[in-house]
Image (cartoon, rainbow, N blue to C red; front, side, top):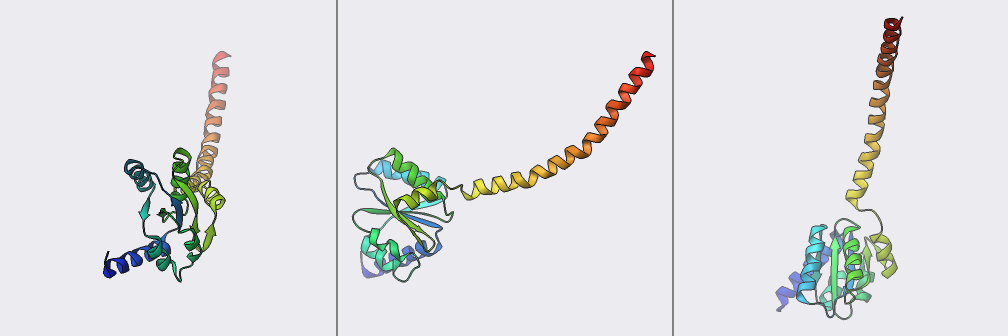
Length: 172
């Protein structure tokens, strides 16, 4: 890799560290190509990405960034999992680590907050952006359906009262 390619990689990594909602740093020593492709596919499906980069270049890219504290995690065979959604990459990484012992989460960063192993686990248990939007829409829609039901209820009550009166009149 020549100097121009290294500069390009450092620039790309810098963009990842600045624009991602969460970055998870993990060791992947011993993963097969198929297992790594599976991880990439799962991450892509969740809206995230996986990137293997040289630790030295990643540390250069971290210099001056708000999440520079994760540079200490860059030892050995590391892989970066990241996503704009502050929860997606952590969820996928956590699920993958449960299924594969060779994938070991070291920590990460969420904005300028540095996360240890337990921090990544806590972030992964939070609801994702889509889940939050769905619950908000549900909360907004519930009062509207209650109002519609309340407005429709008196009419059905009046109709049942009138039918009862009519039945009594016919019976008499």
